[in-house]
Image (cartoon, rainbow, N blue to C red; front, side, top):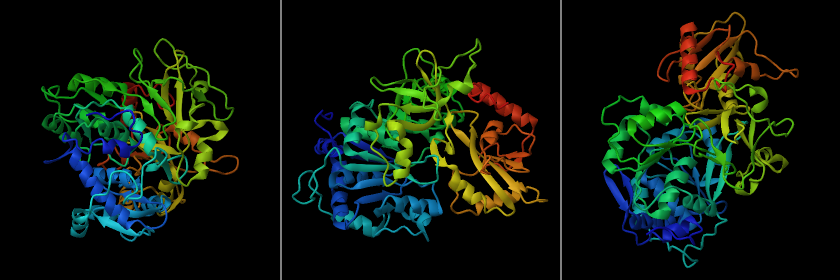
Length: 558
């Protein structure tokens, strides 16, 4: 009972599932058929409609991957609401800003999420806790909303209706929420690799486009059985796959690395996985994963804004981003001259001979129609769409056969574990550190994958020595420090480099990374304390970069 071609909205897809008794959702020890999912969603649709006030009908969701998240996501499609996926790793003023910026009038969370909201000025009318008895009673007592028409709900879905706002981060500290209409979501569902018999494993967060585009929407179309996990766990991954018979999952950031770090067993390949989607995974991780778990990994590239899609091609290296989809004019452009960069040339050992001239920004020159815009952020829109092109904010290069390769992030865009964020909010927090005269925060290469690690350069008051233990205590006291924002590397400088206009110049800092005569402290892993980085540490980091193939792109890091 797959979806039909005339389904042009998510509401259409749900209507097709109303009598579907195939299991649509498994969560821990519970399961729901698609018919039951639609029934639960209709109750919440009516509840949302009853609570609606004047203004944008925006519903923020601050939850882990719980069944309630899926029910509310479906409910919004049926009643014309817009779901705003709130990132639970954000904290303090930045979290409040996300909620206010997107004009949420209702926020759905739980008791754990409410703790994050204490004392924040949210500017919303209603906060619901799903583990509160009052909310449960209201859902149970709600009359299911009609699926279509204006008889009670007053809504009939259109492909142009705004459906989801997905947060991303650009080169500034201002929030950016990508618009996704019901039509775009339905088109994404049709492009997914998901059949009626698929059992997709969804451990990536539902506030992120990866989970929606690769798993949730395609499953709505085909009636596949989603296996939802509260949060990703490397140790629970294989037991879950075996327990539920999962056939594929989509991973972002360092997920494959985390899985490969678990103790190896001789029966790891004894599983039901047919394939894995691993965008931005490194080639060594992809190869090791395939060898150990016995299923292929497919990469590729897709911007949250939907304007640039690069797909793997036969015979192309796994380390590459891929090639453009048919009809799309994607180029590597020098942002200063607006000219296309020369193709990359390699020596016999595979190192780029013309790195400086070959690397530029990945730009879509005829793809603006695929980008539905940012919500309430004209400045970001102008930056992304200048000259009538879509500027991705990502650096790359293109080889002579037309294959695209990733080369980092532009400006102050930092990406850690698959999550993008800007440096400015982190800098604002670190400037609170006593005796910090100046702070610069920037991304340096993650030595094992295509992401970044956070590095901070500190200029301290004269005569003040850096105390790593004191700095760790300081970080622990910052309530608005995002969970991925703490610097892995700390460089103490006599004076921060500046431009001719006395603005901090981060280019030489990025180029040096941790290879500098200045003292550098680092955390070998997230749970360890800061220690002085020595020659053996630098050699180990260099070896990791060589093993992961990152030495080609970041040749300046020695």
